[in-house]
Length: 124
Image 1: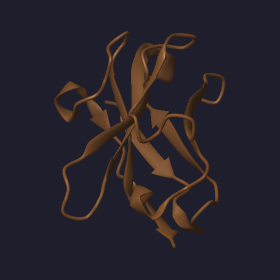
Image 2 (image 1 turned 90 degrees about the vertical axis):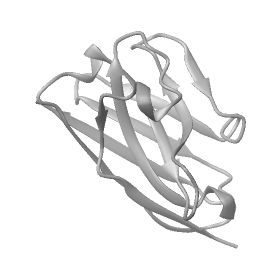
Image 3 (image 1 turned 60 degrees about the vertical axis):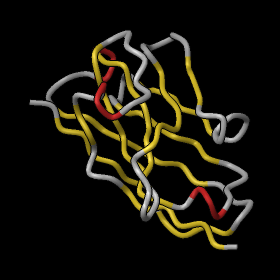
Image 4 (image 1 turned 180 degrees about the horizontal axis):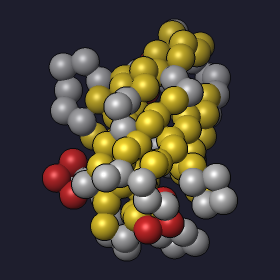
């Protein structure tokens, strides 16, 4: 059984930065494709950024390009989301996600495992 735990959310002013973390138990992240999704109030869960495998291609939602970065630390079994130049519209619950190795995870149906979510609030 794989469990993902997200952390690092909080309140930040527009233009600020934040780093989210995700740790996995039960399996190594290197066995999976990983991604971050978010869900804002009243909206569906949407893809933010993903990585098919360690050292592989990273792909971004248009809203995240140039501002967000996903990274892995296989030694620590962690995945991170570095966010900069944050905007109020980035507010939402952010979820770490893992799926079949090599897969491009851009829709929730492709995800096998979810973190519990961490709240990010960007004030204007």
